[in-house]
Picture 1 (cartoon, helix red, strand yellow):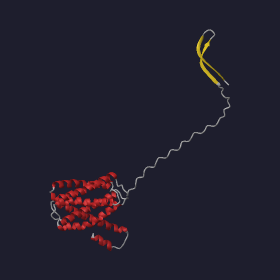
Picture 2 (picture 1 turned 180 degrees about the vertical axis):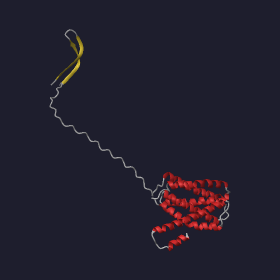
Picture 3 (picture 1 turned 180 degrees about the horizontal axis):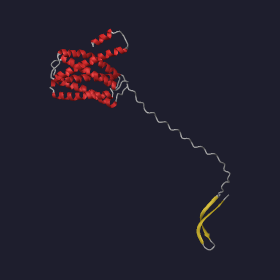
Picture 4 (picture 1 turned 90 degrees about the horizontal axis):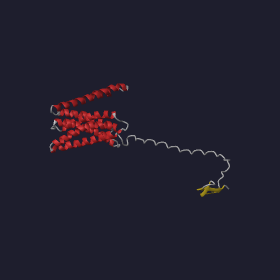
Length: 268
């Protein structure tokens, strides 16, 4: 890092293509150093040992600025309603990594009598939860959820923590049980937030509201059938009887008689 900074300040201003290799070299140096610190922490924890004070102080000093910058960048990305998915996850993962290193270094420096396994496991849990919480708070200020990609990532990181913290809270003595209960509650709250975000997406004020479908077009009023043209009727009027009388009567054929019906009337 020192060589990169000195080279950048001592070199006269040139085209941006001359700065890119310097920035790449600085980033590569930071990443390699972080990997060295992480590998050393895993190595000493696997042997049941704690890192030396000098190593813990160096780890803290080297990673604390990265942790602050990483969480600020990640919170900024999360607060932008246009940034979704891959960019958020790509920003979250390195932020979790440097947060774990800072937690491990600070804890190892301040508490030299902690158990190596507890130091390693708790540093991973706390570092991950710190980074995840910064994104949750950045979204909560705008009334939104973290979205499905970060929601799934959150559940993947916090589910093992809930299981481990619950087991340790149940098996640890009462004097150290409070810390495991607090870690389990913190991880559980993040897990529930990730679950809700996975189900409902990012939602809220920052997201574009879904417009309702347009109403169906109103049916056109039915047209009345056209009035048929008037055709004059030149036929003579129908002649009907002026009065009709219907009733029983006696009919005869000249030889015999029988009961019948008689109809009589006047035409006009």
